[in-house]
Length: 136
Image 1 (spheres, rainbow, N blue to C red):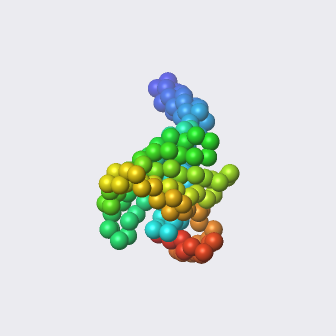
Image 2: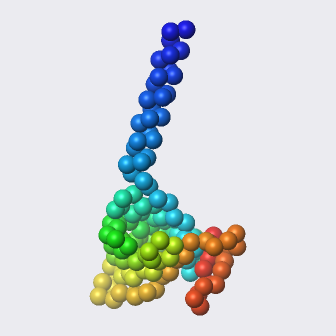
Image 3: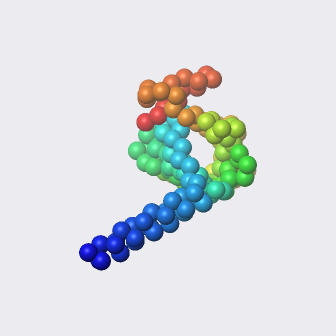
């Protein structure tokens, strides 16, 4: 019976450790609907990483970067190419707009060209501000 106390104590210590680690990191997960489809994003303090699906290429793409206030500056990479991206979020991170450029045309920024919104209901698509957002 003495041996049963050690695993119980170990489980309790591990639970405490993981709860403290979770509080310190406060990782946020966001699932946006965009004009091209779903965009899943993780925010860990000032580090941001996300993935999106390019239906026309049947391929995944990704973004990563640093968050400063409500603006993420980073990189993107997908089947169409790679380059720089700036994502600007609204106050509660429920909506974003993105500017990006490709390494193929580094002098040409595509301004206000990609938008995302948190899913408002169970629908796979919705219209907002003159744009159609896809959630799958």
